[in-house]
Image 1 (tube, rainbow, N blue to C red):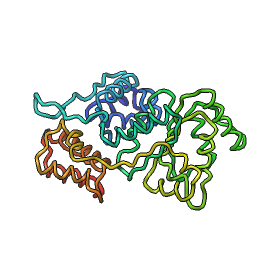
Image 2 (cartoon, rainbow, N blue to C red):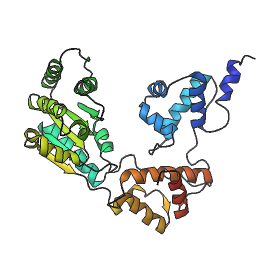
Image 3 (cartoon, helix red, strand yellow):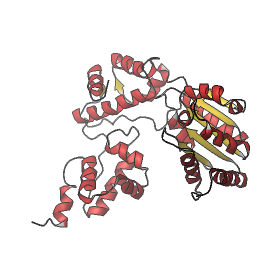
Image 4 (cartoon, one colour):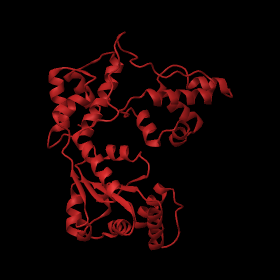
Amino acid sequence: MEVTAAVKNSTYTEGSTLTDKINRYILYNRASIASIAKEIGYSRTTVSRYLAGKYDSDTTDIESKLAEFLSRQTGETVTPPTPGQGQEPGRKAAKLPAFLESRDARAVLGVCQSCQEYIGLGVIVARSGYGKTYPLRYYAKLPRVAYIECDDTMSSRDLVEAIERSLGLPTGYGTIWRRVNGIREFFNTNRGYLLIIDEADKLVSKHTQKKMEILRAIFDQSDVGLVIAGEPRLEAQIKTYLARMANRVDFYASLRGLSPSEVESYLADFEITEDAMVELKARACDMQTGCFRLLARTISNVRRILGDQGETAVTIKVIEQASAMMML
């Protein structure tokens, strides 16, 4: 029997959560997360994290836009979740700050600002999960800032193409030298830019330093600030294999992770028992295993559990339930 449009629409608009409705819409219409993200003005990564239950910021705006999108596509009224839905009347859902101005975040923003203002070279190093990338992306929202996130699979051509795309330049088909020269010309014509290279430790090894030499060549012959960020091994790599870059560094920051007081500030909107706060601080501040990412993942699951249970208090039991959802 043929399924009518009305029946098909109701299949993924009636009942359940907004996340379920969007996921069913994707399934039935063979839509992509990327296309939905473009429609609502969010990045594919952000929408993907929301649908996976890993979105740690205030969900009000993205849920409103997803509901409007689904309403337009189906012709039915889809309402976003009510803030605090599932909780006792009169209680608001706890929120995380949109941006935590920690000492590490201030250090990252300070290096970026100085490099952009003084056309300098900056190096930022941090252990995995310490919260380096978020303030870099936050700064990258400013005018005349280009942000690149590298990975182990990048070739020299891939790096050059990523820079071209971040600047809105047409990707070239010439030699690497010609394309790098085009990037240098762009920066010399459009002054005041900052180029941020995140996860830069993945660009260099004892076997090859060509990709980092490309960055040095751009910096040396352009009026552009450059920030190179990565894990602690990046500092050792630069000092060991790239002496000509090491002696050009103007600004440097090594992140230290969250302090206990910053954890309290980050979770200020939550009702947390004393022993639960001790556990959360350990997850953020422990020098061996703690980091910002572990805290954020834990709190993401905690919020989901509290919403499902209609509770507001964060207890050790809730944290244990949240941990059971992760590979801990």
